[in-house]
Image 1 (tube, rainbow, N blue to C red):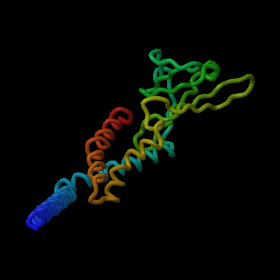
Image 2: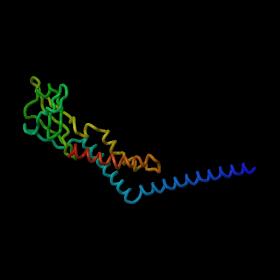
Image 3: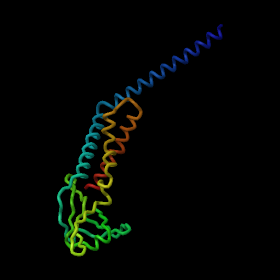
Image 4: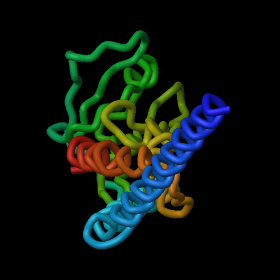
Length: 200
């Protein structure tokens, strides 16, 4: 009888400790969630959400809408020999790389090159030129190929929406903290790098 009583008491004590430990973990989780979703940390996160969301909207507009077009002189562009692409010529215009096909490039009309910029960030997105085939003239449009957010659509925009989705669907769950950290330490710095290297 005493042995059974001792065993039941030990089980009761163990269960009570487990319950207390679980309650303590839940309390600590709740306190941590409250800490990261209020005050200065939450204000910083909201600033990241706003910044990344605006860049996503601007980058989408720049992808679909053309900005101003400028006629190019012979000094405004050069052939880039550091890059190779089979059956294509690599043309560097103000740091933007385009890859017209050899046949089109060799038939181009001299002094017909124009570059079209994006409307918001004013980065080059299209190279336009005339080609002469027999008696007819045709207009060619080459999309930018390298170092450009235009080639990353819509992956770049989806990447930028991670902070916004984290903000909208915030929950006291492990995935929320992971997504928050991802937004603060990967998406935000990554966005700044993309803006610096491709848009400025």
